[in-house]
Amino acid sequence: MSRLYGDENFPMPVVQALRELGHDVLTCLDAGQADKAIPDEDVLAFAVAEQRAVLTINRKDFIRLHLQNECHCGIIVCTFNADFLAQAKQIDAALEQISEPSNQLIRINRLQG
Image 1 (cartoon, helix red, strand yellow):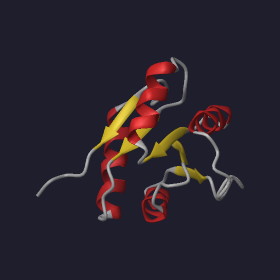
Image 2: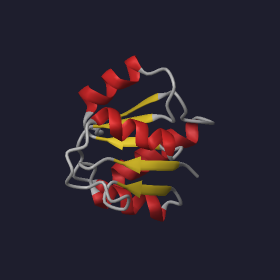
Image 3: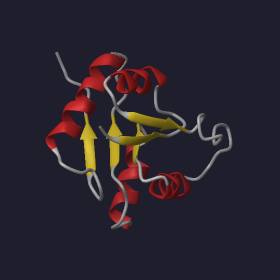
Image 4: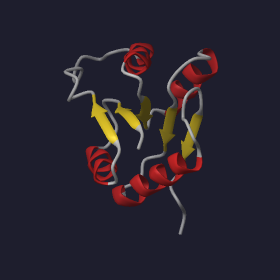
């Protein structure tokens, strides 16, 4: 399963569901990085150092970072979805479709319906 890093605003219920699905998810809180207003560039650098793909709902800034940085362990940008389990399953399915998230931007959009 995938090694992921949830940024400060990423919903904890999605993190918990991803963990139950077998993913290794570290959060800013776990890493002692919560409530410190750490710049997005530093969040990405930390994830790279930890060899983890970033999980974020901060789409605009992390898409920009993806375009500026050729080398990272993956960036998963999500729209907010109050159906946390559904979102976790979407992320899990997207990760199953690829062999390695490195250097990829993965977009997870809330399903309409």
